[in-house]
Image (cartoon, rainbow, N blue to C red):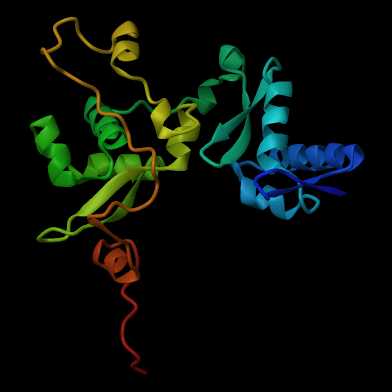
Length: 234
């Protein structure tokens, strides 16, 4: 391996081309063998020291761009997926996903575009109450999650989308969600849109906001997601 010093004093380790090629093959195999998207940190742990994982993955992505399967990025994870224009070929009745209700779609859209958002805020945007069953369906699908707790009276839970949400809808990050013009072009918005109507731009940041606290074990117990730990009794 050769180390080169640039003018900004940062050091980049350049691998021998043969080692670089082997690192690329290892990364390809790791993603291919996994049923779930693989994180860049996981890949980096298994490649030769100094391997530039983002560069390797982008090179693999370009190699598979015109193939029947594509290498896609999901946040900081990678996965092989059937090319979008060939998805109809591999669809079967057995794999058909149950369609979401209109209410569930509305709630999912609100969470995706407005996260972090509380249940009360969801209801305020929709103008109707949101049933626990609707949120449960989205939770079971793995598309939404509890983000944290808002630092306001009652400490309401905040909701956000998951990496599985990005993976299912073919998004690299939240900023790839369609904007106003794209939604209008797809016929998902009526022609009579109120003047000044805007689609919110997702933050694209998975970290907690300034007005959020992290979810703790006690919070999970309170929300019924964990059995109470109990005391130290015999």
